[in-house]
Length: 101
Image (cartoon, rainbow, N blue to C red):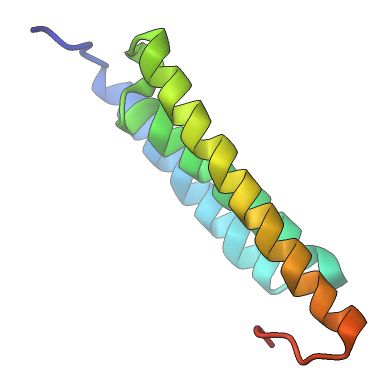
């Protein structure tokens, strides 16, 4: 069974992109964006995670079934995070103290 062989330059490029995005994350943490701080951090983290999944986990070079499996897992993750955020947001409406301060 042979796998796909990627050049080292690709891995170095992805590594540098991850380092730059980590720097952007740190920079964004010090910028007051109000309620959008969490959203910006999650977008950057999602992009970094997609780079790791796509290249370092070699999903880019796998079959359509593997890509479907990864997409299904991400779909259910989004559903669970969405349900969590709806519950978290509803705490403010009922007067209950939020779990995360």
